[in-house]
Each structure stands twice: as C-alpha cells, then as structure tokens.
Length: 503
Image 1: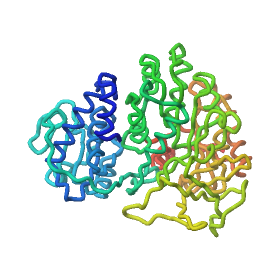
Image 2 (image 1 turned 180 degrees about the horizontal axis):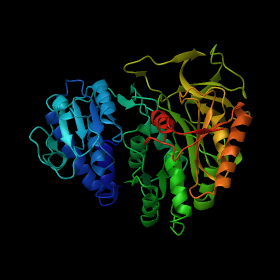
Image 3 (image 1 turned 180 degrees about the vertical axis):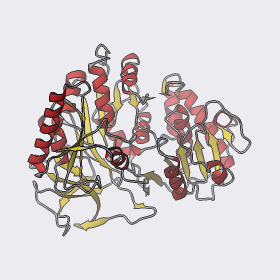
Image 4 (image 1 turned 135 degrees about the horizontal axis):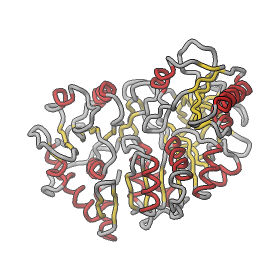
C-alpha cells in the first residue's frame, strides 16, 4: 500500500482530487494525507517500535482499510489480510500463524472466531473499523485514531518485509514472508504499458486481503490515480464503471465472466466506453471470455499468470490474446520461467510440458511454517510451482494446468466453454471420490430443454475424452470460487458428493 510521504506528494499537487472511494465514503488526497498521518501517529504511541510488530487485517474492502494499511506501510510494519469470507476456524488458524501485535478488525464480521475477543483482546492492540462503534474500552475505534492527534512518538522503521497468505484453495492458507517490493512491478506496468496516471481511475473488486488486490491498489495510488473499491456484485460493478466513467479495472476471471454476462444482457445499454484497460489474473481465461471482452469492451484486456510464491510472471496483452488465446503471454522484466521434468528436474526444450520453475526478482523468501521447494539452475534459485506448462516457439508461456499433471486443463475447459449451453466448467482430478481420472464439472445455462441439456453433457464428455481418454462429467449448479477467483476444491467436493455423475 502507499506511504504517507507519497500521499503528501500527491496532496501537494492536487489536494482536492479524490484519491480513494468506496460505496459509502470518499477521501481526497488532502483528506487521505490527514487520516493516514493521524493514524500513523496513533500507531507510534500505541505500539513499541523496539518490538517485532506484525499486523493483521480482518475486514472487507473499504476506504478505512486503505487508511489503516497506508499507516502500517508508512511505519514499515508488515501486515497481512485475511479473507473475511473464510470460516472462523480457518481465520483462527491464520491468526495463530501470524501471532499479531496489532489487528485491524471489523467487529461486525460474522466470521470472526468465537474466541476472538477473549484470545486477542489483551494480547494485541485492536483497531475497530465497524460502522457503528460501541466504543469498547478494550478497543480503539478508527474514528478516534484517524481523526485524532497528529503528534507522533519516536519511531525507527524496521528493514522492509511483507507478509502474505496463499489463497488456500485446498485448505488453510499458508503464511509466507517476502523481502522485495512487488508493487514496483505493477507501477511500471501501469505507467509504461497502459499510460496510467493522475487522470485515471481504477476499479478493484477483489479483496484487499490478497496481494492482487492491495498491490494493484497501491500501484494505482502511487501513480496518483483514483482507486474505486467496487461492489462484490458484478451487475452493480457495471453500473459503477458506467456511472463513474472509470478508466481501468482489475477483475479475477470468474468475476470478469459474471460482469460480461451482465454487460451483455441486463446492462447491455451501459456506456463503458471510458474503460481503457481491464486486467485479470489468478486463473486462466477461455477464448470465449476473450471474444466477449473484445466484442463488448474493445481490445483492452490484459491477462497475467502469477503465483503466490513469485508474483506476476507473464503478461498477455490484447495482441497476444488475439494471436494465441491459450497463452499466458510473455515474461515480465526480471522473470524467467522454465519447464522441468517433474522426476529429474532437468530443463525441457520448448514444446515439452513440464513442471514450471520460476526465477523471479519478486519471489517470496520463505514460508513461515513449512519449507519452500526450490531448485538451482545455472546458479539461480528457481521456485518450484505446482503448475504445469510449456514454452512455445513463439516466445510465449503456455500454462496447461494448475496442479493437474498430464492434462491440458486450460484447453479442455476452453473447448467445453465453446458450447453456448455451458455457463462454467472446472476440470479436476482432485475430487477424492474414488472415481478414475479427470472429471469435468459443468454448469449449464438455466432453462435448457432436456434434450439440449443432455447434448451439452455428452459434448463435454467427448471433449474431455479427446484430451484425457476419460469421459467423466458431473453437473453442478455453480462452481464455488473463493474471493481470489480460485476454485474452492473442499467446497466443490462437498457439493458434488451427493450428486450423480453422468458419463
């Protein structure tokens, strides 16, 4: 997130221009500077700078979260967000993993652990962002801190470090530490590739709890643009884009699909011509999504391949997506991706599918509570991912699957989605249901005639069979995604457990 010094620079240039807004509140650069300065000063008085401070944010997206995290960033206090949609037990495990000295919390969240106040009320300093405060004496409310005294106690910033959690698609998110500033990569991209600047506005609907959310927000603010924290509903996001004439946006792929659906049906008349670019990442997108974006919004889509361990690795711009819709694009500066034999870890030539290993200038340093898998190639540390893919002769990277060896999941799902009867699909071997091979979990459009529905399921099985030799298909009402746009496999397993599978 942005520092107080950077906020002051933008405030000096344009104090009355809006810096950040959500559906309830907006702050100009001048107001943001005042709030961050007051909250930063309060933190210096509330915390001991000799201690190894660590902070956690348990709250949904809001202007208040931006103020709080900017104050933390200004003091060099590493902080990490928690997905507020997670259950209380998982959040309790994440709290225990971090053992924070400071917690930013929205006390109205229904998912707070049952023992939260008992466990952390006397252990950590608490700042409550709740809209209607009770002013509990154990807790300082945001209004008291961010609109209070600006006098700061002596403070020495520690060496830079950042905390983060993986998205936790298969279980409890894993805690990691990074000692490199990844926002510089995003700043350079926004400035150099799309010409983003003070006249632009950037919509973010994904949680600031995840790196993709808060780092893109921080990059946009660093360049003097306005950040709009958007609604979690896709149709409402279309209204925001149109009514506020926003120029850029970041959406995870499932949200982008829902937004395109709304923008071409119920909101087909919405004027979205102010948009200059849309970013997506975190999961692959289909050729259908690329076409729909081009038809409705224009040639403005950028899709990137990233991992928790390494940050953004490749970027596919509009030209890449038009020429090679299944590619993940070309390497970002400072990044090398190699495909390795999964058994010997030897580098494979272009065209051969292997386990992806990444040498990144923005790589994380280590997991906090488990080892990080790495391999040294040509004297450089490469992080071993769980992803598979190959390097194309065209210089682009092609990711075939996330944790699904032997299956080109990206092409299978893309091919199945070519059927207009299919609304969504997930291909996986991770259902743990005792069945052999891969299964395509298909979500069909509502209102299909029985014969059309059956044809769509048979076609999905035929597509899967061409790629894998198997033809297992299960129909579901929806694919469960977490807030980062990743498939929640535990939830998917639960939802499919009682459903019949159609071959």
